[in-house]
Length: 235
Picture 1 (cartoon, helix red, strand yellow):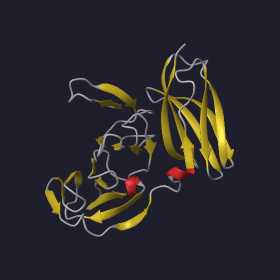
Picture 2: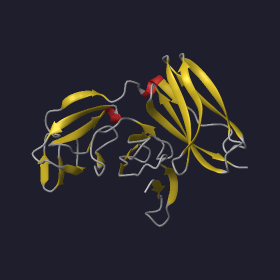
Picture 3: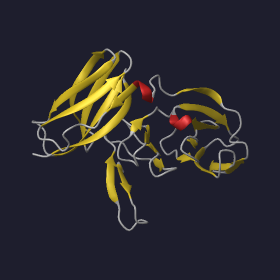
Picture 4: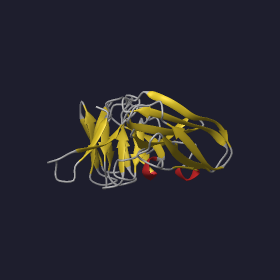
């Protein structure tokens, strides 16, 4: 579904730590370490990354692959995902650089690698590589905005009733939007939408018309969804 769970005792107990907003469905997750993880889900986080163990996620890019594609990261920076017309998408530099690799199979939606060179992929058949998948084509940056260009902070106070402050900063002039979603993914508010010059900003969000519960606020710069944070309203 759209809920991400975490266990710290070998699966005896599970805790829901994140819910994908806007009716997104988690198709695949991969955690190469305790803190770094990747997720393939629906809007507004089609392909996203966490650096705090799954509690908060940053949307990286639209993957351009089929919905049942899986993700596999052999370490924190190198991974593979998806399939489309004899191609596999390779992901480098922690998700900020991608390219395509040609494959003999027409469909490859699941992967397993022992290191950055040796791995397997397949769906209707299995293929094997010993050179990391071969040449990479169509290499480029997945986003015009790098992580260093913006920062979205946790709202404070949190939990709140009914007013809280959302702080963000941008390094370049841009169109900035902040939207708020409920746990079902429905957009309930757009408290900020406009053109802002580089700098630090504080947004006062009033949840007086909302019911108690968990909400998500999403930062978008130049219509590019970049970060989602969770907050709780208690009345």
